Image (cartoon, rainbow, N blue to C red; front, top):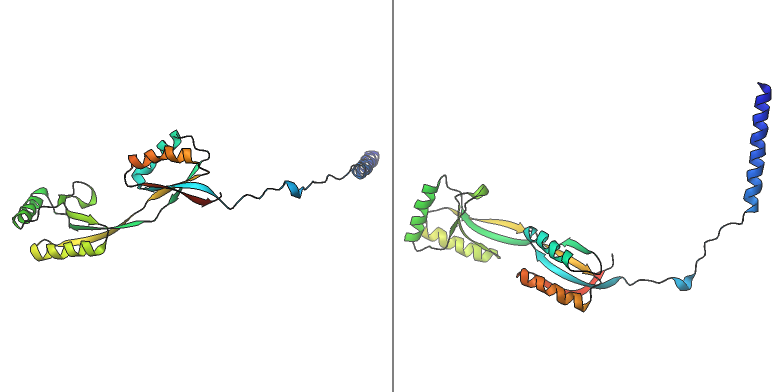
Length: 196
């Protein structure tokens, strides 16, 4: 047993000496840095901003963008949220009650409305959606003066998305203009964006 121990000890010492000798013989690897070959990229690049799209439109726009051979992938980002003011009544219990209220509205000369036909606001009477609160408030005052129905304003946000298309040239810009025809409320502008 002692012989095996000393034999293994001798092999380990010999191995350590050989490894030490080899590492001294090898030249260290140097990483060459050539400052003249370093190219600094600009912080911003030419890009196109295509927007603003509702959540329902985003998938259609992505399908259309994938058909155009873009130089690089696009990036989808949040655009500003748009606030809308909806003037409406509470939902009525059934359709017959809604019809009675509609007849009252017609008798008072109010003909611009829509009855909600699904969801949380089923059987509510909608008088319109507006971009600013003052217009919605004016309509609400008019309705409250003319009718006995309790109308209200519901404020909500519509979240939009826009697409940043990087390193785009004039030819690709002209190809993308047809998207603004497919989505009339959208716009396309060429600008500079921060490099990814």
